Image (cartoon, rainbow, N blue to C red; front, side, top):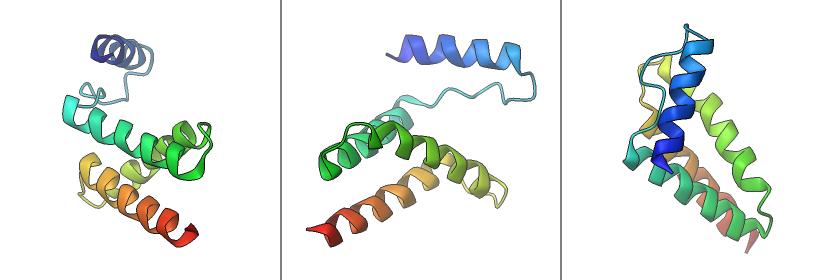
Length: 90
């Protein structure tokens, strides 16, 4: 999986030079994103919610980066929010 992510990241950076060279997530960040996706898919019972949720986390990461926070912080905060929402639904 990481090979595809690295290759796709490099292609995006070539096409859109304004993107940061280190666009591909670290293995740890990728694992955290996949964990969030799993939590959302299983918690809602709808697989389609997983990629859409991670898409929104990308926007959150951009917004928080402007405030000096890391992508990891965005994933942590989003995972916490998802957990609270899914717990409230039970």
